[in-house]
Image 1 (cartoon, protein in one colour):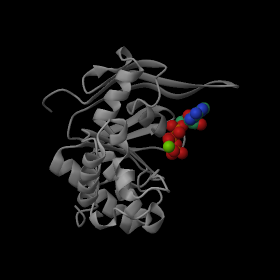
Image 2 (cartoon, helix red, strand yellow):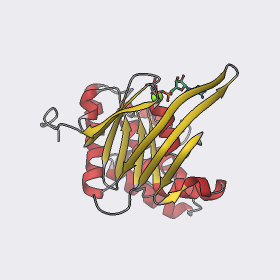
Image 3 (cartoon, protein in one colour):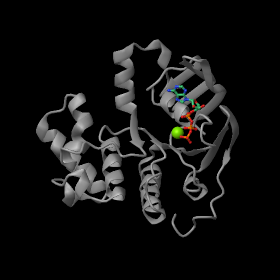
Image 4 (tube, protein in one colour):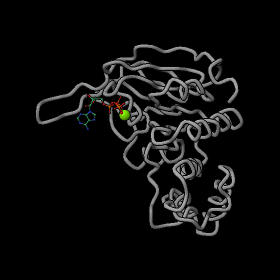
Length: 239
Ligand SMILES: Nc1ncnc2c1ncn2[C@@H]1O[C@H](COP(=O)(O)OP(=O)(O)OP(=O)(O)O)[C@@H](O)[C@H]1O
Ligand SMILES: [Mg+2]
């Protein structure tokens, strides 16, 4: 593929320090991901997937190795610079949606713009635009508890998109959803990837969810055990 990688990782390792001593979670991970890729990450429970996503998202620091995000070696950045890079480049989506229960959907989606210092009128305009994009334009005044789980995940995706990220990191985004709703959410990721060129990296335990991606990376015991293309026959009717 042409151009600069969005992610370049070499010799990456992570040990968690615990009372019982260091717990090795990742060892010697080497990976390059280019803009526009759609990568599924699989592997058994405890194999290091979330640890890896937290490192990709600069939510945690590696114990060894190097990580460049969008061409910048993250180790060279101070805390504020790192926060700026993260907020500017990455949108996060989590299994549990992580919406604020007490505020309406517009305010939930607009939240990252408060940190970015954007004024209220502009925040509301952009949040409405993102809710429209995920098919929930009419629900802006609702609270999270008044909509379904699948709709809440759409709101979380709208929130992830509000800073116009180049990269979406999603850790088991369909883990709480039934199969039909999961496929709808995957359709949305596919659309963002295909139509807007957003790079998507997504953790899942489900092979049919992984089949929406173009590339599959598998972790076993903190090691990268497999990295290859995804066969695309299994969800032909949904593509
Ligand atoms: N904060 C922590 N402190 C200590 N050990 C941790 C911590 N977080 C994770 N670990 C350990 O690191 C290893 C990898 O955990 P991780 O959460 O990355 O796995 P995972 O692949 O995401 O699993 P799952 O599929 O269950 O979400 C496991 O052995 C886990 O117990
Ligand atoms: Mg996990």
